[in-house]
Length: 317
Image 1 (tube, rainbow, N blue to C red):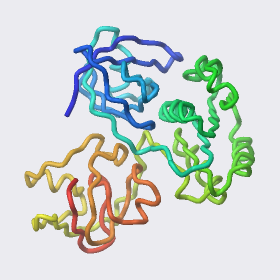
Image 2: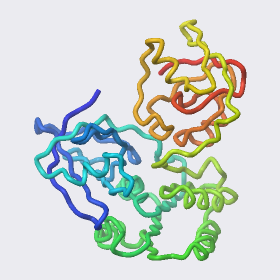
Image 3: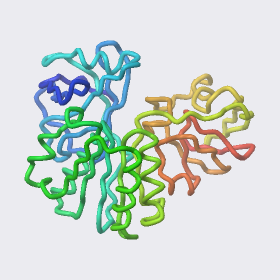
């Protein structure tokens, strides 16, 4: 289900990042969303991309997304940098891969660059609940920092936000180690940013809090070596059976056979095609399931993941 919305306001956060405030055309309010959610956005060129919501989750009057113009844009971010107030875009309902851990005693948010966007909605929610959290935001320079006025001046964030401008990579590891030294097994860590940045955060904090308590939000797909891929069998819970060739995904095979699967990014990022695994062992290649979900082996992303076993029995959600 999609919804056409109107761009009510456009703000230039930095030379490369602009925020779009979206409202319903019929004047109705949105349903409050769960912090950490993202939406699909189809702009003027028809290109579909995912963007994190960065408005207060409990404010139903509008939704806010931040769009960074990428140098190698394939039409998505570039087009959204051209829209103006009054223009219309199409969005999906919010969905979550990054969620607030209800059992945490302390929350540590660590953002790199544009990765601050999904963490901002978490910060709003944590602030409204008066739970213990801190946000550490690493960015190349002050003029490239999105939401800088908000982060520095919003009363609820004042003593919880820590800004790092131009931190050399050689110093980053030491700062993260110091932060990890203050965390414990009751802490949960949330990170978003460049892949190398998130990998370093995860590697640093996992020994302190446990790998399952480090939560990441990915914007780009991971490159996987597919040269050794081989065919395998899948069976749906309806009894239908198919062969997945080495050069095709489960999603592609199902669609070729007239079976509709909800999808969006087709890169293992958005989580829209996640389905259940009833039998067999998945070969996880996505960036949407958590470490705990992957270890459980009872669900998988059909667009990129494959099989370690010769056969998978799948339940479509």
